[in-house]
Image (cartoon, rainbow, N blue to C red; front, side):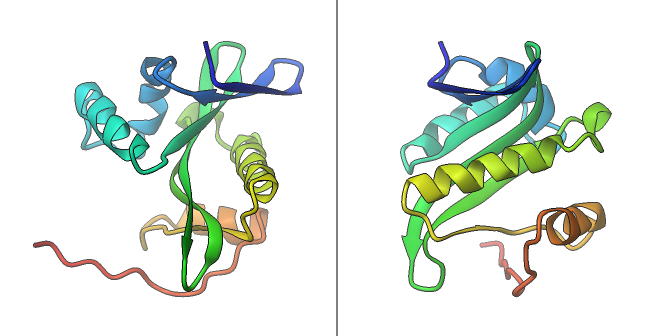
Length: 150
């Protein structure tokens, strides 16, 4: 049983995944997180859920075509917001507007829960994703993320 379900149109449904559905979602999230095998993915999701991680997937029929993993959180620079850790559409389904549908759902969900904005980061080499966020979804590029391995 899924936690929530929203019918988008005939054949398209957004479902919030609990423990059910992770196996269905894995082939899509693996396209973004290629370093994780299925067992590692499940372990990481379980750990992230302790910190509020949720998963919404767009299904075409019974197939996951787009995946969003996020938390609702608060900090001093974004206020109450949705932080999107993972957003990916299946390679074979790109260009159909599925990412926009799912991101729009996250925005509505966040607004209904009191969030003031949606934020995410994207790697430099992901040029198509940047174009998608800026031109397709009206997001603003506001800075860089810095990282240091320990």
